[in-house]
Length: 610
Image (cartoon, rainbow, N blue to C red; front, side, top):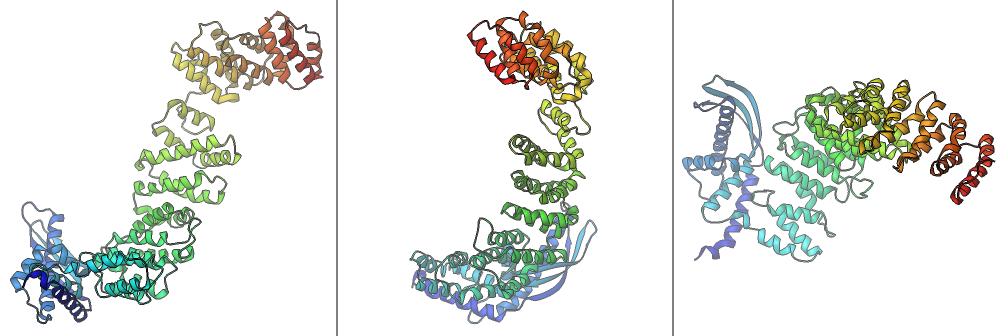
């Protein structure tokens, strides 16, 4: 008879043996053993420790494996030497049956590594691995026993019959990701089906106590997704999960947290458990982490808290993440600044569009204060996020005063840190200097008003241009340099035109009316600029004359008749924009227009000052 004709019976035999083995060895066993590894000349302390631990685990697997095989009925067992060789060759597979390893003592003298440990073994899981190995060596693949049936049922349309059939198949095999990966496909199906099977949910939760640590890493997140998809967890179900957390692999923790958060109600998600339930669950995880009972090897409290905060922020619960950070930031001191800085991006993204939420600012401040103590270790790209937020708020401030208020809050509360960021970050030099000047930040690298005024007379055009831009940023605070500014304006008015000189003219013309006290002696110089060929310079000049109306009216009227028609029209336009003044009206009524455009401009100006 061919192997293919016997295959259905072989599959049935495998399932029966697996079930018998699972029932015979339901309890996890604990062993305390020791081992001394003789190191080679190429071994380090780390490699010797790893080898010692592996050999110690293999010894325990071999010891339990002999007992497990003795319980098999009507099944040929491997002899001791053959089994030992199989364990050595398939260590990673058999090691999945080890649920917990606790180091009790270890010593390294440079030549040998002594290790004593307490090891927990799941005999049921080990028996499954042994049977699977025996069937594989016999040319039979036990992992395919139900795969085809599951695939066939999944192709059918949803119905109660389909759900019953899939549940029956699922409840006849253990959750073993190596051999029964289809179990997770069925679990995802029941998370979405309209035809649930009442017995399936308690069955899956019951598997937690029998599933190996390795497979729990995949089962827990999938189980949570299934259970929370249409409601919450019962107390008994949550306690069943908590009971196995001390023996899961560390990588299961963030996956589990993500499943819990993803299945919690949110402003964008109406289904799932409540946020209050989520907070209780996460608090329970933190408590386990604090007592070194979360995963094996244990995941520390700080690492658990940090990864949870990141997950909360990424999934839209940023306000909760910020609240918890502020409350538990002291626990994160053992985590590097580089790792803590990963919270900047989600926190900033949340605040950037919510300047009105003042109650969240102290929570964000807590993170900035924390990172400021180790600022040099934070990557520049993280500090750049703070800079981009400042830029966004500065741009939005023109339309919404809340953004301006938020920006001043950030700069005033964290002036030293912002100063440090700006000085260390790769950013446009002019932008950096203007931030320091505009918001009077400490440790400014920019020139003082006196230094900038001296630089106006440099032989380097770029230096002169930047000096004029920085003086404009100083504004009224540059008043002490009034004489230098006027002298530069007088000189540049007669210099040959060029892009740098044009920029200097524009900057200083905008600056002049901001200086105090305003001086009537500056007006003739301004009138001279009304004839400039650059279209922006006459506009800036008219703005200056209007801003200085308290001292500019008389000098303008005095020299008006001496100016060409173009300058006269621009002076009239400036008069039109000034506050109402009877003196201006009397003067304008005596002006004789040189052309129709001037007549129209005079009429408009007189109407303003009547």
